[in-house]
Amino acid sequence: MTKCVAAMTALLAIAVPLAGTTAQALSPTPMFEGNTTMPAKDGATQAVHVVVQSWGIAGQEREIPLRGFYVAHLLSGQVSSKIDGQTTGHLPGDYWTVKAGATMQVKVIGEVAVLETTVVVNK
View 1 (cartoon, rainbow, N blue to C red):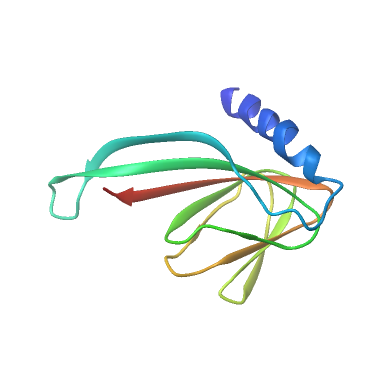
View 2 (view 1 turned 30 degrees about the vertical axis):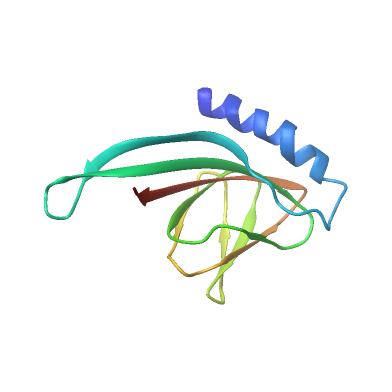
């Protein structure tokens, strides 16, 4: 339920104002940012920084301005993503990854979509 409320809030706060524009740059809504620890490959604990953002997307194909590895989660709408020249369709609830060094362009199929990204980086 909380994710649904957060998605609707993001949709109303970001996506609706974007619906009438096509040239406006994408700007995320911060959903969570914090530090934590997680196990490293060698079994030790490592400090990481986690950033979760929500992106309201409308109009023409847009590039998500993130660099480095991240996880994408489509909360609402339907999109096609192009990563390293490969285009894939996504429906609400889909998760996928973008590898470090790659860029992702997203095209909304319909009116508006809300995409959530999660970035985890070593501190």
